[in-house]
Length: 256
Ligand code: SIN
Ligand code: NI
Image (cartoon, rainbow, N blue to C red):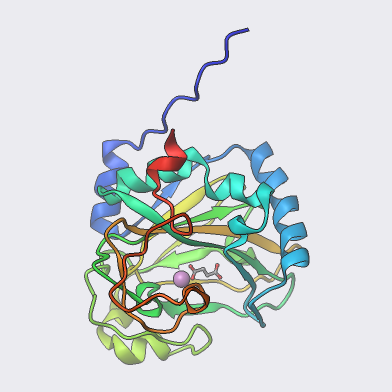
């Protein structure tokens, strides 16, 4: 039997326009449900084996799993995710890092509103984009994402606490009055959001853990600022260095 290469994933013009306008978009079935179920099991095993950099009431967070876990590397390097991210961002991207985020069953706390990019030691990255992939069904009650549309142009805001309910709105009080969009996902669906799109995740009130995998890309031309970050601290990079090399691979190397 002749094996054919998988068709390149293609994002519709409507989805691209929605991403450019809103700063986030929902892409159903970025992987299929069976794949998601397999990656859910792999994510739980990887988190147990590798441990978590944060383990609090909001989530267990394991970072840069792809470097340590061959099974999860297949998801982080999935050609559909890289292809969709580059099409939505409209520029060449490289991997910044991935993370498994597990919200435990029952009474977990919300992940409060924030933007992602202020946490990162980057300049010359104007198109950062994160794929948040549901590895279980994530109804609103299990800890899904909520976004503030069309606020990704707010590039002046500082980092805010993930656990402080008012933290983000203390620095952006006008956005209290913006509409919010809450996006429940089926296993295998994902959302993509811009690194400056304000977002939060609801608590998990259900009896099942919420398992999500997040793959974060930044512009290929991103420069390291020298600020502290768990991903770059061990690398001994000089401020002003390019984020290149095999630790930050180009998205196009995943697309084939
Ligand atoms: C979460 O899943 O709890 C938060 C994810 C994010 O902030 O990107
Ligand atoms: Ni975030």
